[in-house]
Length: 396
Image (cartoon, rainbow, N blue to C red; front, top):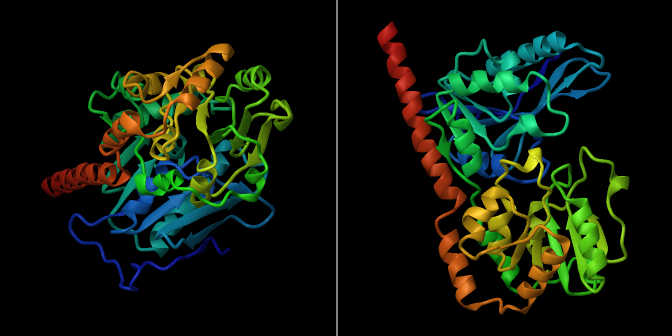
């Protein structure tokens, strides 16, 4: 059977990419889909793809066709690999087929010197046999606390934390937790593409589905799931019917019918990353009504610096990695009670958009670019590849 639809193992200029010392390809194992919300994996791996081949292996889709791995090289240079598996497989059958498909990808694309980059520890079940140049675990969330997490996730994460050459973490509180097992875990918190979101500071034509929403507009973009405080949003909307709440993002893992419906709450659905500045340009403030539960205990929302780069005041609930540093430095207002939340919004709306606050925002964000984050990660990764290569040479 045809297991693989290969992409081209060449760079953007059509030159064949041959492995050389310290040059590596990268194979990412992800629980997220490439075309889902544009976030940490996309920011980092598109930068990696500027210099090397990157394969982004998603979780499988189940359909009626034969087992296969569909590979599509995107304009950003990343090859997205989507496994297709039959229905009604048990865990062992599923992992056996994924192993076969991944081995075939390695063969067809001639991946001789490659790094395994994990976002999901569950991928260990079909990758343990591989012999990579190095192993990275980029831990962006405490996945075991999320709704529907697999029972085996905690044990597999423990295995990965111990086995990986490098462990990166996406937030301060998450890093502290992982250092209990892996003391050398590196902190790389949410970074920012400043130029992209700074466009929202200038007037822009309003998207059609937002243009008719009455100001003041309070906006959110991001995944809407068990981490989102629907009760707080509903209470705030009831307390201030003159405010318009603009909610952008996909609804996952929760019943869409459970979302609060009010005349002043506008659910606009998911938007492309490129569209976000146009929407934010029409907001008067940005909000982050995160629930305070197990799933948000270790999160470090990427949207925090993105809202700030857009020049919008931000009101958030007391998520630890938002309180420190953003709340403590006066960049974000923190409030949990509905009455306190809307009062904080009112204060934010009265404050001038420029001045000292915006200068402080820009000074903070100047230290937080995705380009700098990737350069630091890449330097660590090259050292890890060299260390493994040197150790292997000594053994032989």
